[in-house]
Image (cartoon, rainbow, N blue to C red; front, side):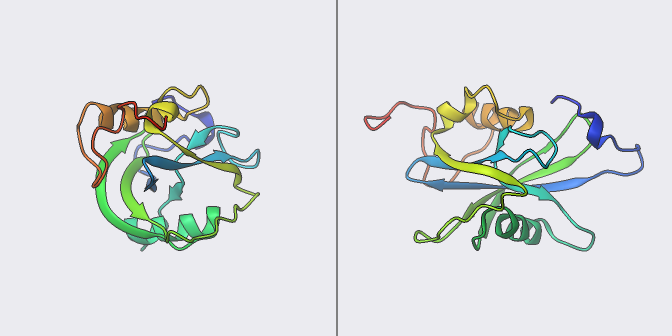
Length: 157
């Protein structure tokens, strides 16, 4: 992953983050970061830092509520990674209600999309850590329930 000078950590302090991987109709919920946050304009899965005394699941729920204004239900931790600047990232398969009305927080999110894994994997604006997640998924390092062969082309692509 690419190092970002705005987020350098001392070796004794390790930041932790949690990310939600939300699937609907073979598409992934992805946000474009606003100009007010680190890595502005980049595409990524919604999520963020874990606060002191907060579990990964609690962080996923809070971050989804803050960024896109909906309730989120973490289902299963599917992957773990570490950024080159030392942030430990927990990747959680999560669900939102079928009828959830997404309302983005413009301070953090410029827009949102539902993209196929292959579309997202090839996107020029994708954060490097998210690219690594998709590469691991493509290599079948892990699976996501009810999502077989995520990078295959389908008739509705």
